[in-house]
Image 1 (tube, rainbow, N blue to C red):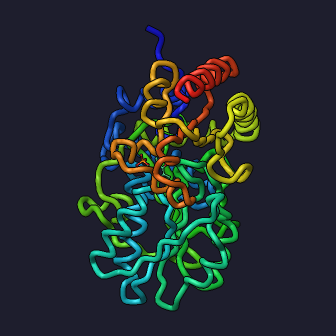
Image 2: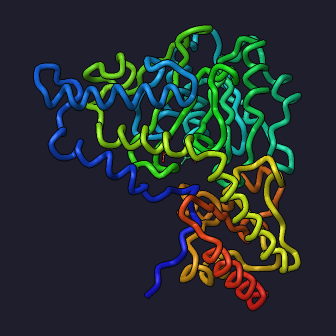
Image 3: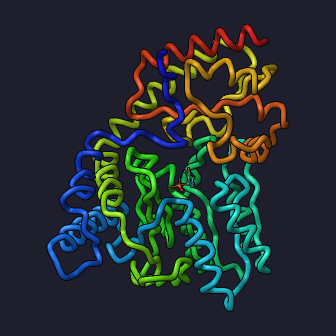
Length: 381
Ligand SMILES: *Cc1c(COP(=O)(O)O)cnc(C)c1O
């Protein structure tokens, strides 16, 4: 049986062969613990981690000491939000975030609410963009953190990160951004964009799962965070635990490839998306969710009016691997909180499909998927 065509690149991506290649020595001969300072095995691993840290820092215009390796963006978000809350609670207990954030931001915020912090969940406009006037109005003297994602994992919408960074800097509030979907796909510069904390992950850009990083600004201002994992004092005490050299090496290589081919690759992916949208537009009553142009090149999120969402997913399964909503919440039966925040009804939210086009997709695959969807939607209606 033919495997379905993979169009779920917001959930994860396959490891690029070039990435796998550079990881392998660190499982085999160079398997040492980077913290072992007494022998060659440790030195090899330590040197690989050092180079990876430098490369990742350079890619976002940070310095190496500002990179804390984590198990992924979920942990980075937790460390940023809970770490700042714990370190700054005497300054204030108000946090601002957005209704369309990933659950790895929303859930730590809800947890902090249970401890007595106050969280404002900013609404978005019907195109998915946050209202900047609303943001400015919401910042108070006791606001310690603004957390707004760079790119949304369901509707691909790109928030105006530079402007948000400037607003936060002017008001002297720390700015965290979850850039799990944005890294490698759009330029990110923590200096130019006034970002104080930024969450990253490798597995959305053809790196290994189980590795990511939190960027924490060290100068102008110096950001303090309270560690959330205590132990051997790795990562300057901010995240204990033996560093996973192969995954870290994969992260740096994946990022290097993504950035060196960024313009060309995103253009190619955009062409595929436009083709998919043009073909789907043969159907009546479809709706594009999220801003038409201010979105990730590989993202298309479409509502098929008058179609039962579950029946559509079932019809698509043998041919194409897609999600309705995010991978993390599609196990739940609730409609997508992102589409609800755009003002959609439950019914419309259920009848929505998220397409995530990536590096290895071809025009031929898009053609097969489009034909199958057009046929399926017509027969279901
Ligand atoms: C995938 C994703 C996460 C979670 O990242 P992990 O590395 O899988 O923990 C967080 N935020 C966004 C926006 C994501 O897309």
